Image (cartoon, rainbow, N blue to C red):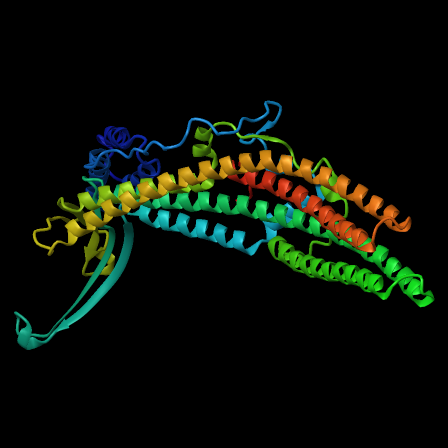
Length: 509
């Protein structure tokens, strides 16, 4: 008859165990209760394993100083002040920042279909699984086993002088070799794996922000090329008509052939520019298709850069905000914490390791006597090991961990400073690009007036046609420059958004 474990002091032992474990590991009490309630009185010796587990968990100590993140060496504020009417970068999501519906649709498709982002998500899953494997080392590995052994001993080896045949049946619940983490070695390795996982997740979010910025810039560049192509086509049409008129004038002797060749030169230049822009548009469309992961199916984009509802104005805030907003800074900080945890593990390796191996169950020579009275069997085998000579392996391992932490500190400081520079550059560029747009528009107005006046002077015979050619050539360049500068300003706004950390955490997992 199978009976349960003795109930005397069982409640007291369970309460003591849960008090010792406390909040350290929430799943371990359930595991130990499973052992306590196993319906076999022959496994009673294993009910003391929770006490040992609790001692191990409550006795874990750290032999290394706690991690401290170095203070960033950056200025208290950015060199350029922001408008108070702008939105806070930390509170606005990309869906609210990019107000153009078509652009929002493209970004949404990219976040779903982009293969680089999918690969980054798989790296996160890989790091999460590695952390789970390392975390499992904190728990005892308990398993059940049932088996039968049959053997035959020849007569010349038998004590009775006769051949013997023997059978052994056994059912065992066992604890595999489990290290009691007195010095925090296993826990430090678990902490390092956790920080690596968090760093990978921050890198995934950084990849999401970079992808959003890339799609936005590709879209803006495509809008720029569409508008520049439209301007080039208008110029080509105008110069084609001029070439037709001058060809007719040459035929009737009203002008020289030199003027005709000059007009033809202008037409050829405009056609060459149009072909270059068409090539650039095709390449940009292919790049956008790769980023989105599907065909964009874009409508005509001419005039998009003139719209006032593409982006929302941002307020940069303080440099200290970057420490909690920039994914690359968060990833560098997690890597630094992982390096600190590896130092703790390397130092703990110098101390003795205590391990437990135990099993309890029932065994019998007959299957019918497997659960009979007196058939209980158990093994309890604690062990301790202390490194004495390893040719400097442990010391070099500690030195390696300390050097890697120093490298992580330097990388963290560099990442913070680079982030500060990115924002400062974007703010400075925004200020001066606004000036450039104003100047370019003023210059375009001047060039249009110059081209008009040159044409009037030529028609009245007061100037050579060369002046008209120069004015038209400069007018085309000014038109192209205004479009380019306006797109550069919008791209700078995208870069500022990415430099500030990409806003609210609403990217897909």
